[in-house]
View 1 (tube, helix red, strand yellow):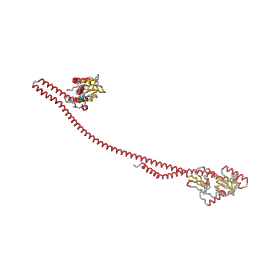
View 2: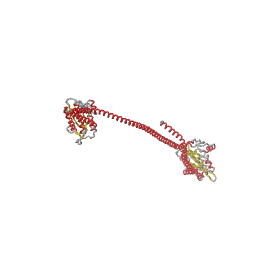
View 3: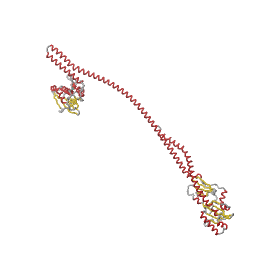
View 4: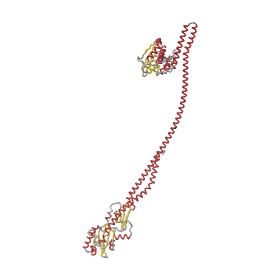
Length: 603
Ligand code: ADP
């Protein structure tokens, strides 16, 4: 897998490329914004200019009508006819002063046909027009020609810009002089106020006469030809003879103009481009930002889509891996299963073989036991049978010799021998017997007494001392009366057999006590005790250390079988002080009376 960074890089590169491709879209946006804001600015500045022009024209028109009216005043006409009359002059001066006050004109004055000023509204001021000659001004010439004169010019004494309206003063068809009204234009400039747009009013020569920018004043906006220069030099509308050109950076300004037909002027409003550039820049910036956001959003969307696709691919891969793992696991399991089946089969075969082997073993064991048994039985029974045969033969011979008493003795021997044979057979039956009686509550002490009573004669003959250590209270155990008596009888008989091998004193100890849920009966003798081999094998059937006349080796085997059937235990040991120590562990039983009929061995 390539690292994720390598995956991401081309995507950001393509986004940057997209941004580059989309960047030219900002150009039409800029054009649109520029057009929109230019139109808005133009409309706004156009309104401002229209207002200003209306104001300017209104001012001029207000004074335009004054000279023809005032020229009809008799005082003025009189003065023109008697120009040296001081009284008339004074009268005219005061009249014009009053009129100037009333109309708000800058100066009103009366000129003689030679251009000399006879009376003026500013007669009493230091820069008075009285006595001054303005015959060079075009408005004077025009009025003297009988027309209405008008002229823009800088006041020669006041240095104030003014507009001059002149009208001839007539006496019939004769022109007596000229009446002039000068309007102050300086204040129209101040009306403009402090604003970013600039005012630029040019006269018919293209020279700036009114402007909101003081350093633009009296600069020429176009080349002046020689004729124009001559007229300017002649009429002196400005203080300077040849106006310098106006250096205006056209790119920095948005210009809008109005031509004033009546007076031949052009009023311009110059709006700084920066006013347009700022909102256009803002619009382009916003557009650019929006584009950037769009691209980023696109990038984000692409990233999310990519993550989504990656996740789907990852999920698919994980699913595939899982399926692969499941497949592998299934195959493993199938393999394991077939192996298990194989093992089960092998085990079954092994078990069958084992069973077969066991059967064979059992068979062999049975055969071996049968062999041992038949050898013992034939040994046990052949001896008395041989004896019986010889006693019977002897009895025949004795009867032939009329020795009936001796013959009876032989017959008694035969009877005893058959009894012994019956006893041997009874023992074999007892060993082979399957006892089906359920254990019952049996009192231990009476069973011991019974067993002792049966062997009492033999014990006494052998001078065996019996040491009893039994509790007075009856010990109840789970057993069968007959079976218990048989076990006790066997054990006591073995003890007597063992004691027979040694000289007196001969002793047998009998003790019994509770041990948990059991009652333990211990029988000890001071005979030779078990040999090491006997301790190991005494419970095997037909194991004996005695002569065939004394024992069959079935006593302890029978005891063991009976004890097991009763849920008890037979323990063999040697006492540390010498002699055998046999322990019977029997389950404790409820107190009770044996109501069942005594067991019958049917010997
Ligand atoms: P049997 O008495 O016919 O030999 P048992 O099964 O009763 O058969 O006894 C097996 C053997 O255990 C005996 O041959 C003897 O060697 C040994 N044995 C049993 N009881 C005693 C005892 N009290 N003292 C010493 N040895 C004993």
